[in-house]
Length: 579
Image (cartoon, rainbow, N blue to C red; front, top):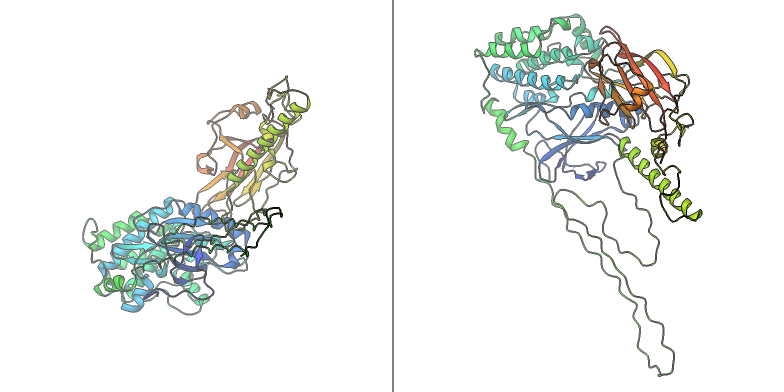
C-alpha cells in the first residue's frame, strides 16, 4: 500500500500505461495526473498522463510532441530528464526520472521559510537547470514552487516546456492563460511574447517564496494578482538582506533589465560570501531532510501475480465396445491440440494478454493489442517496401505470361526502379504515382515559381497545392516550420529528401537532382543557419523537386514567428531509371 506522499490508485486510475505498471498516484494538476512506476531495472519513474480534453485537441498534440522532443535533449544535474513518452497514442504521456523529495511548495507549507544558505543554493541550482533548458530552445513558462523538487543532493526542475503545448489549444484560446498567476512574469500576465527572461522573473519569485513563505505579489483572485505583477512592485518585507539584490533584479518589470542566468549564479556566489558555492550534503534544514527518506522514498514495485497455465481440455470419454473383426471401426475421438504461448514473467510489467489455447483448423482472428502509432518515417518506409515488392511481383509474373523464364529479360525497365514508383504511394492527397511523364527521358519540366511566401510557425506547404498556400490542418506535409519555446525555429520535412545547398551556391533543377547530402530524417534546418539567398532542395517520393530560397524571418518584435521564402517547383521532375 502506498505511504506518505503516495496515494493509492483509485478505481478510475489505469493499472498500467504502455507496459509500465502503476504503483501509486503522485498527484494531479492542470495538465493531467502523475503516477509512480518503475523501469525494467527497478528505477522509479514519474509518468504524467495528459488530460483527455487536451488529448482531443490536434494543435495541442502537435505542440506536445514538439516540446517533448525538445525536452528529451535536456540532460542537466538539476533537471528530471524525460526518459520515455508517447505523444501519438489515444492518451499522450511522458515519463521522467522520479525525484525523492518534496516540492518546494510542500516543504514551505509544512516547515516554513527556508534559511538564507538553502535559498541561495536553491536559486543557484534552479539557474543551472534553466541554463540547460534554455540551451535546448525551451522556455519553462510555468516555473513555480510546485515544479521545484527538493532532493537530498540539490533541487530539481520539472515540467519544463510542457505548458507551451497548451497555450495554443482551443481550451485556452478564449483568453485563459496557462501558468500559475502568482509566479508569472509581467509580459506573460499581459499576454505578450514570452522568452527566457520570463523564467528569470519566475526564479526571483521562487526565491522570494522560499525565503518569505509567501508570494511576493500576494494572493487573492487571479486578476488581482496579475494586475499587481504588471503594475505594482513586489512586497519583499522581511526578505533577508543577502537575498535583496538577487530577488529585486530578477523581479524587474522590463525583461531586458533582468540579470542573465550567469549573472544570477554570480549574485548567489557573492551573497554567500564565497567565490563558488559548495553544496554540502545537509543543504536542506534537518526537518526537511528527515522527511525525504521516511515519506518520499519510492516504494518497491508490487510483484506480478504468477501466471496460471491453461488447463488442457479433457478429451471426450469413450466406452469400449466389443467389435467383431469384420465390423467397421468406430469413429475415433479427435486429438486435442493445445498450444501454450510463452508469457514472460517480468517483475515490473504485467503481461498484456494471457496465454490462450489454439484451436485446430480455425482461421486466425486479428488480435487488438495496444501499440504506439509508428512514426511517419516508418510508415513511409514500410509502404515503400511493400510497393517495391508488388512491383517486383508484377514484373516476375509478367515475364511468365510472355513465356520468359528470366527475371531480367529484354530491354524493359526494371520493376520498381523509379523512385516515384517505389514510394509514390506513401503520401495521400491525390498526388501522382508511378513514372512522371516529363521525367521518363530526363527532360526538364516547366517550373512554377511562388514569391514571398510567409510560412508561419506551425504551418506547412504541400507542393501539390495550386496555388501554393500555407496549410494549418495538422499532419505531415512537404515543408513545415516549427519553433520551440525559445527563439529557435527550424524548417523540416517528413518522408522527403531535404538538403541544404552550400553558401553562395546557385540552385537549379539539375543541382537538386544531383544533391545527395540529405538532412537526417526527423531533423530540420535551424533558421539561424540561414542567410538571405540560402537555398534548400526538397525531393518528394512522387516526383516533385522544390528549390526553396530563404529570404527573411520575422523580427523579434513580431507577435508571430515566420519565415519568408521563394519556392520554385518542378512537378514530374524525378527521371525514371532505365534498366
